[in-house]
Image (tube, rainbow, N blue to C red):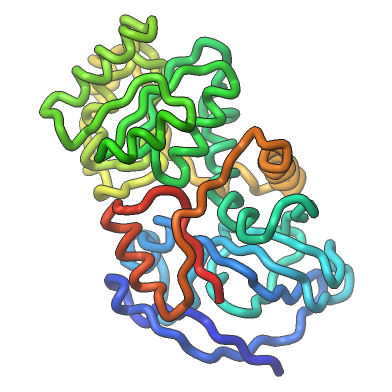
Length: 329
């Protein structure tokens, strides 16, 4: 039986609970594939699982996103040896070798390298779902994107503007705001320098022709921005809360949605937008096609070995990063 080095969460806690261990890897069974991992994505969902916010039972192999090459397949597999693939939303991908359900693997086209495919899979399909299904962004949509220089934020900004929408970007430094501008954002707000973020967002919305407020707010920051997000929406606008980089949003009175103008709030997770294989393939193909055609630029903010994984997660959790961090086994 083959063995693999894997990044293991030994107990719930901070990045210090991560350890590299040798694990046995079985041969692929019916419908399965053995994938040699080229890169694994560093994501906030890994943090929520490691801290126990999302239920997990340590010890377990970390990682929820990866890309690599198929090295062996079981009977009836949906892929072949040598195929380049990417996948996400399945726990246990921070390892050199991984057994995968072949129906959850996305084919990676030849003109997209594996590191880019890894960096684009979870966040790219998340951004795609947020602008096509959570809210359908179209010509004239005014959208607030919090943490617009982050991995999902940069992708959202590009996708919204390519669909004819306008982006009001927030970030925590001028450097990050310039990154958001380079991705197409029209208005820039440093949320570390204001005591009235909602007021600044509404003023920015008025400047871009939306005096009643934004149509949609994409909020992956959570606790620190949630109130301002609600306060910046037009009547019947939508808050898409897709993460909690600053902490989880505490319970709140639903009457706030009424008084704010019959507002909508949704808390999506990608798993529910790729449950069916055909939807998974369609979403993945569209993201990879946009990358190959140059319509979507994937910014890799850093490459780290397994030995540097704790450092990578500390950088992510401190919100000191721009673009996507990846682990290279």
